[in-house]
Amino acid sequence: MLQHSRPTHDPDPRLDAVFHALADGARREMVGRLSRGPATVSALAEPLPMSLSAVVQHLAVLEASGLVKSEKVGRVRTCSLDTSVLSQAEVWINQRRTFWEQGLDRLGAYLAETKPEDEA
Amino acid sequence: MLQHSRPTHDPDPRLDAVFHALADGARREMVGRLSRGPATVSALAEPLPMSLSAVVQHLAVLEASGLVKSEKVGRVRTCSLDTSVLSQAEVWINQRRTFWEQGLDRLGAYLAETKPEDEA
DNA sequence: ACAATACTTAAGCATATGCTTCAGCATTCA
DNA sequence: TGAATGCTGAAGCATATGCTTAAGTATTGT
Image 1 (spheres, rainbow over the protein chains, first blue to last red):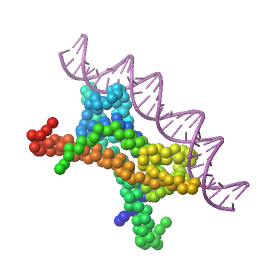
Image 2: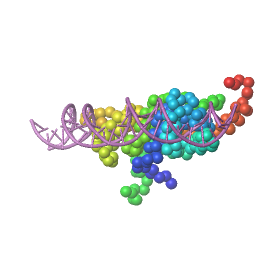
Image 3: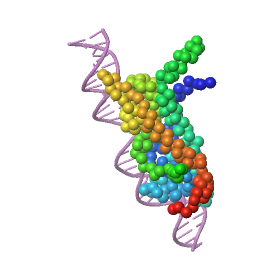
Image 4: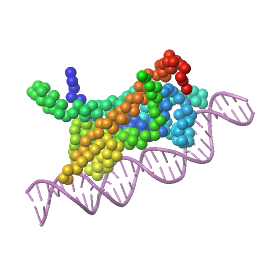
């Protein structure tokens, strides 16, 4: 059965972190690199016009958001993407977009058409 | 024909703005409200625990990102969502996610299977 | 005309972000 | 053993963010 499914009330700190992590070109480039497969910190840093230290700080932001996991073996840290977190952000956007696109009018019509006796 | 379509090189200031706009609970709540239909500035402010001034500033961020358009008639400003911008962010995420999920191995197999004579 | 409404703008302030440089610390290679 | 590699951590600093309060400007209702 079709739920009303209005966009849920929202102060979600996890989404704060994910969108914040994606709001930077360098971090998006790192995510883009990781979408092609795991990479070391140096590999992530290589195309970026900044110090390794800066990259490590960006990486910390990505890890804090849950978008990226990493593991150190020997002296090398290997990073990889957690697409489930990416997916959560995608779903949030998709819900608002589709909710808008199906339109209030259609929802109104649905409500009118539905049995009016059990309603808020 | 299927393109290689690696995630594109990225320093995209528009995405910076969109993700930054979404990286705040109050702004996401405003977007959620607008996904149900246009609203005035006061209507957007009403559920939020902050001054109207603060809301206007959040609105400025949303407008700068292109997510929200608004028009003033008389003394009332009415805001509405631009889902095409929302869609761009969704696409960006979706591309990285699916690129990861189809996996490097499968891409490697595809490349191997494809005619190997015209290659970099 | 007068007051209420619906924003608008500016100033100020505490905290956060995005770098930099410099120094440190385990691996791994020669 | 000593040097190169691959990160790690702490300052420090300029700028940006997220609020606040206070004052101002058009409408619109009485």
